[in-house]
Structure formats: structure tokens, C-alpha cells
Length: 515
Image (cartoon, helix red, strand yellow):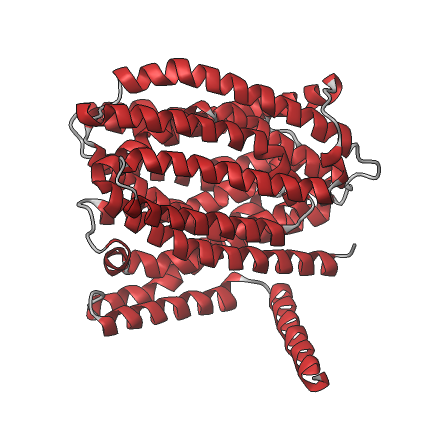
């Protein structure tokens, strides 16, 4: 399959995923607002804290899941793949891992909830109830990992998009169920979230069994295959555990110093960042399998070009959201939540800044991941995650406000995105360091040039008024778009985009004339 066909497939899959993202984004943001109103600030914060304790225990699954996805995709790029034996082995491994995490969670995690988390006494029973159902949902999510990896490896993004949309709609339905039933809202919410997890898992598995040959393989365990996956995942375990500690451990530490309301503020800021990362994640989900398959087939130069170009485009996709949202964060939050919790606006702005550099961090990991040599990354990168927990604890102990947490996370992301990952890609995958840094420098130039006019516009217009809001939004989008087109992308990409648009236009014109 030529580069042109691969580019078309990436574009097609990206469109499917963006269609999914737009619907999910609207539903997720609306659902978050109504759920916050129904549960209340304290119960919403309690669920996020309890869920954080459960997710922290699932870092083993994240490590093995990353290895599973990489090996399934890599096998498909080889002439004689051994997909059936691979899938059967990783499926057994995930079942065993799921059982192990549930046992550990119900012993250690439950003790932590009882003894360490700051939860109002009258809400403790509901929090424990939610913890049990969160553990159950986590088990099903762990056993689902190989199936999702197969869908992405086969690049069936349309199915992935449709089922994800269904999941978002079901979560929206939860809100209205909460309003109907008189029982404890937090407990009902935990049960329904678990039910949705099981339902979505069932749909994915039915589709996979009917579509992919390897999924039909009987349960068996190949020691040699497991050693390969476990060796890769073992190094990834450091990265996964560090990320889990940074994300969920910090949530637990914050709960030790501040009320559940502060957890709610951080959770809402991270939710916004998560929705935006889904936007760029859709593009990465579409392009990553192509990078891995090119590398597996020995097309190292093609994998390099696609990896560096996609990193650049990923950043631009993030930038086109961050610039207007950074300037319009206050009215945007009012539209979303109506009543904006105290301290949320600065949290969101710092999180948006952090998201830009996360684009470099996650994108530049892909060529390392494709090669399969993740030892150095697994040793160096997690240091920036591990160190966040004691730094945040120390700052809170010294009396710093919760916003210090956001700055610590942002600084770590900047270091990883523009210093650590470029060096690792140069050393491990042998990409030109000068070429990587030029790509990052180009992105920074585009960022500065894109922000000048919108910032000046925001100075003269009130973003909280309708006219000011729309003026700033339009100017921001136009500024980023123009700077990306004239400064951010090369002639080859411009020719491809113009040709792709012309091809679509002529095809639609032919279809109209035939009708």
C-alpha cells in the first residue's frame, strides 16, 4: 500500500474519530455540568477521589495494555503474523491481572479509603459503596484491553467511533436517571457507570468475535509470546506507575490537605484537558498504527517522516483549540457550568498551557514505542512523574494553595516535551536531533505569532459580552489557521491538502451530476 493510500486511510479514520469526538465533547461537557449539579460539589469530589484510588491500582493494566496494543499492531505489519496465539495469550494475561488488581484493591485500597482519605462521616458508606462498583468496572475495563487493541490495530475507527458515541449517550442518560430515583445519588451513579462499562464491553466483544479471526481463538497461554510482551510491558510498568502516581496519587494527596470541593475543581480542569486531548488523540489514534506498521515492514524513513510530521500536526490541532479557549475561558466555563467553582479559571488556563507540551511528549513517544526499545524512556521519563508527588506534598505542607499543583504538573510536561523526549528519540531511534528541535522551534514560532493579534483583540473587547466573545473567537481561529498555513506547514503538505480538497470537491460534483 503506497503513501497516498495510507494518507487517505489516515484522513478517513481521522474524520470518523473527529465525528465521534465532536459528539462526545458536547455530551461529556453537558453531562459533567448536570452531574455536578445533581451530585453536588462534595459528592462529585468524593467520586473522583475514590475513582482515583481505584485507577491508581490499575497501573499494571496500563503497562500491559500498552504492550498488547504495540505487539498486535506490529504483528500485522509483518509478513507472517501470529495474531491468534498472541491475542489468546494476552487475553488470559489480562484476565489474571484483572483478578489480581481486584483482590489487592479490595484489601489495600479499601483500607486507604477508610483511613487516609478525607471524607465526611455521613458520606463514608456511600463512598465505600462507590468504591466497590468502581473496582468492578475496572476489572471489566482491564479484560477489555485486547479487544480495543485489535480494533485500533485493524484501523476500524468507524466502529470505535460509533460505540464511543453510544457510551457517551448512555452516560448522558445516567443524569436523567439520577433525577428520577430518590435513592442516594452517589450510589446510583456508581452502579450505573459500572453497568455501562459492562454493556459497552459486551458490544465490543460481539463485534470483534464476528470480525477478527484472532479473537475467535480459544483461551491458551504461550509462554514465549508472553515473555516478549511482558519484557516490553515490564519497562513500560515504570512509566505507567509513575503516571498513575502523578495523576491519581496527587489527587489523593490533595484530598489530605483540602476539601472535596478542591478535588472537584482539579477534576473539572482535567476533564477539559481530557476532552481537548481526545481531539488530538483522535488524530494520533488514526496515525499511530501506520507508524508502527511502517517500522515493522522495514520502512524506517517512511516511519520517521510520518512520526515527525504527525507530531507537528498534533501540536497545531491542540493550538487551534488552546488559543481561543485560553482567552475565553471565563465565559466558556459559565456557559458550561453556569456556576463556576472558585479557583477553576486559573486551573484551566495552566492545564491548557500544559496540554500544548503534552502533544510533544505523547507524539514523540510513538517512534520509540514502534521500535520497541523503551528501556531508556521507562527509566528517565517516570522520574518527572515520580517527583511530582513529594514536591506537591512539600508545597502543600508549606502552606501553598492548590494552584501550586497545576504549576508543578505544567513544568514537568514542558521538560518532558521539549527536552527529554527529543533527546530520547535522537538516541534510541537515531532521528536527527537538529530536525526534531527545528520542528519544535517552528511550532513555538507559530504559537507566538498566532497569539499576538488575539491577545490584542481581547484587550479591547470584553469576552463576557456576546459581541466580544464572537470577535475574540473568530480572530483567534483565523490567526492560528493563517499562521499554521503560511508558517507552520511545508509545501508538500500544502499540495497534499489542496489536492485532497479538490479530489473531494470533484467527486461530490460528479456524484451530483450523476444524480
